[in-house]
Amino acid sequence: MMKYKLWSAICMSLLLLNTATADMRVDSYYMDDYYIEAGDEVTLYFKFHRAPVKSLMGLQEKLTYGPGDTKIIQSESPDDYYIARITPDSEISERYILLSNSRKEIGHLSVGENWASRFEVRIAGDTPAATYNMMFRIYKTDPDYGNEEVILQKPFEIRVRGTPQIDLDAENTIGIGSTGDIKLTINNEGGGVARDVKVDLALSDPFTPLGSSMKYLGSIEPHQSENLSFRVSVSTAAEVKTHNIPVTVTYKDDNGTPATVSTNIGIRIDSKPELAFGLDQVDELAPGVTGNIILSISNEGFVDAKFLKFTLEEGPDYEVLSINEIYIGNLDSDDIETDEFTIRVKDNVNKTVIPLNVRLTYKGEGSDTSYTKQGTVDITIKSKRVYAEKTRGNGTTNTAVMALIAIPAVFVGLLVIWFVYKVFGLVTSYINRRLFAR
Image (cartoon, rainbow, N blue to C red; front, side):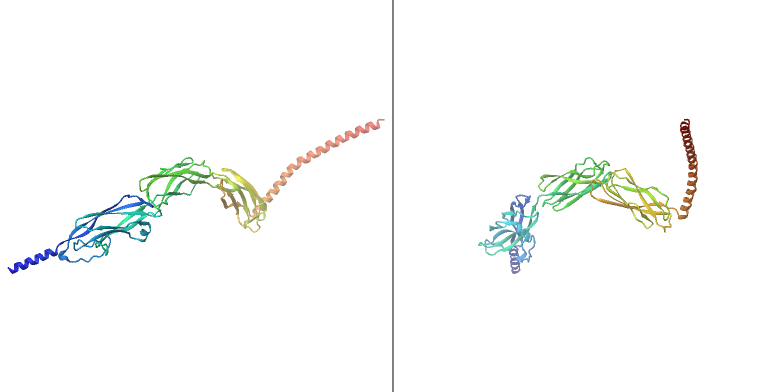
């Protein structure tokens, strides 16, 4: 009988030790506006309750506080009162999230009882778009709200959104009659996400799109950029200048509000003259011999060459005896210019081919950019022996030709003299007859 009573006492003691206790649980929290911008005033709502829990034999659990930790209340007392409080959880949150009344006195809560607290928050006017860390805490205190003990803490965030601000960067040069890419950079300089971004180029003559002139980019985060390109061909009749192309960018902000940015980008159509030079004519030349050469310049490009200067530079095998630099001025597309120079081949040259150093300087149409083209033109020269033999042969031939020309000339001269003599004789005979007849 005594064993039964002792066992019953032990069971009753365990039952009493295993009494119901309670802890705090947050049911939900929400804001009155999901789209928050700098300067807004926001109302926060937290709903929580005391939930029953069991503690074996009343053993106190050692807990450390971290995000979401809950301290178990081991006893139920009518003197337990509670306080709810929100605070910034970082230095940047403390700077930009302004709280007018961050402390709410709840009073006593029984096990199973629900409660909701409301907090007013103001976002500073210069708040950057970002996510700001905050902390919600519940404190257990006494009826006089004196000593405070944290029994629940739950982190939460306030996301401040910004307004997208779209800007474009573009710097392109494409040659006449060529195919190239128009490249753009779309920048989001604002604090909000730009969503459903579309870019449309209004291409017209002299540009022909090779593919779509509209691109879909999706979303661009704040302070991020997206690069894109449009493949085009340029007409051979295009004017050399900077052409304006209208660009339209459409997007939506985080709130779903559509926006449009319309602007122009400049595309430079450029082309430089394509000049070539060569040999047109050359005299018979040999070491120590002076002669003339005629050089040609052709413009094989789409645009005219401006301020063209043609220079025959000195070389190790020859010297220029004439003016070596000629100012041509303009050379139209598909046009040719020839110029004559006098050179002397140096005495010690033992080559059959010598290069002439040629330099062209010019500017393109509609551009102040200067271009230089340098190269060589090869001419063939004879050896001294071959040149001398040819020169002598030319001398004999010339003498024979001169003889053939001189014979008729002498005959004609004699004939003229005879005719004059006969006329003079007739005149004198007539005069004598007239004088002596009397």
